[in-house]
Length: 382
Image (cartoon, rainbow, N blue to C red; front, side, top):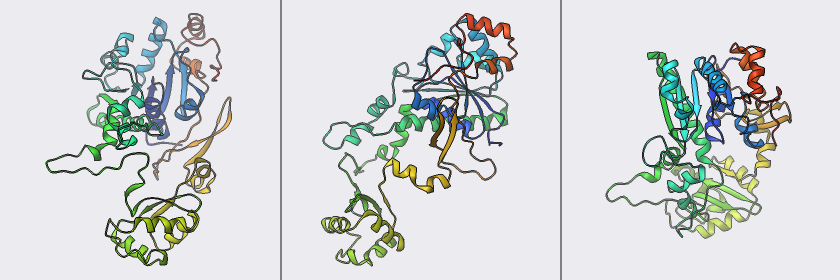
């Protein structure tokens, strides 16, 4: 199957979630992604099964001369390098942008960290929660009482991975025009600021009216969560046409003016509490009012809709058998999404080195020197 990025080779040196998500995203659209890790940094199982998908995996200790030589030979064949080291580490290892681009001027080189590559915070380590805190996300999520609370998902990790993939693809497009690659700098805090852009708006006389806090149910009575007799419903009926359709339903005829933000919210809560979530979803869908049930993940996984649309797919892992996972969101008619399996950690090391021209004797010498894993089958994950 040919993807939109068919023929593009990516070296993914990243750990945790953000950088590996970038690599996974590129693989889903056809790029050949080779995950490069030192043997001592085996990932935990769940992230590997998630963001390791669709990649080949090699273990290579680039702190040793033979490992660095192997990586540089691999970099000569690459189109893209993804790295998530702290500022200055890649340069000390001999694989910084200037060092690689001198050998391979067409390289697209993405640096992904917590706080960017410039400024006083550039050398700080950090994870998603640190980026959330630094950009106001946790205080908004905590609410007006002033006690911060982290959002339940690592938005910035996955978001930064997608943002980085977007930047890589733009750089590859520009390379088609100029023949030269470039460096990309993206960070968790950059993504957090982008996701918060609606709250960054400010001007003279502007009065912000933002939703915040775990107790917030929505922005207005017609755009909020309502508890039903057996669950929760998300209603979005602020448009005039939706209000008129809602007003025609018998349970809401006591609500005189839906355009008035001060209308009887208590009555609305009582109305929604009188029926089940499924009844409300069906009734509101019949008249064209946007509403959806709040569902648990096990319900999402068991719903045929996700599988029919290819949003939930499965692949076989060499050690864990059939593994289900979420697929890419975009759909393309000519170059479909490619949902690959996660490899064995380090399981492609010998194959990749052989493709680069290393002999069996050289590979054994690298193994004896601790440059590559002792086992040719890869390293088990806990």
